[in-house]
View (cartoon, rainbow, N blue to C red):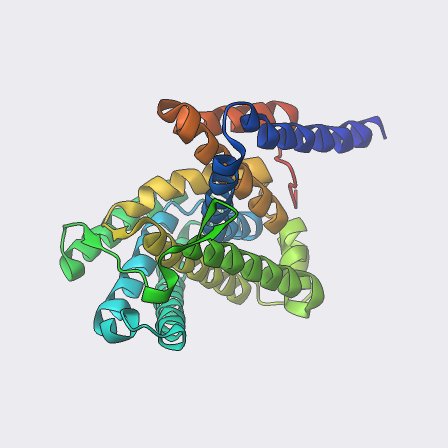
Length: 329
């Protein structure tokens, strides 16, 4: 009883601390700049959520440390880049319909290609190392090297400029607060994905099985469900989320490059550790904390922008070792 009370209050105190961190930058940032940075932080957080949610679900259900997730992220960015290059007339057209269509086509292509790649990886490689974290780290790290080298073979080793669809460019000036259009689109994408995942996990039979698998996968298998088919589907879904995040982040950062996945994979693991393994809501909250903190600190103390998130992760782990919204065991 006492332990559950401590656990409950530790979560509330941690979230209260996150709220204070959210308001504290107002002491050193002008209000209008603060609003602009907040929107940028929300957009970055939503993009990190797309990647981190896949990592969280895969580890929470499958108990697999997938260090190849960053490479799948980069593959999604490059597949989207290829679609944009082949449909450049739609990308530069002054038409909301054509711009939105090419963006949706690129999203679908990236998620499909990388999901299929994820299925192959799970069946051929990952399935052989279930239950052994050391082998999982080593073999998925090796997969990362192979996938990154394949990017260099197919698309070349140089950085490429990612074009933003014409009507996604620019900004709105709302009472002298600059709101970039694409950042709002990123926030909308993140909310749609979060809502979709919550709907699937909580309102469908498949979601019930997945959540049960987070708690006790042996029991799920004993109930007659094909746990390996479920694992393949979860791995493919996580890979597709990584691809979506890769494409959206590439448009956000205006570039693609072979090693882009490694940087964002680090952020994704920080998000998952803060939010708690196996929790979609935890991934969202953790991603927003990381995105907002990064933008605020980058404005105030640029050299400390990356390190502050690691500090926050350490503090949260000291208070709640399982993360804010840990699910499963």
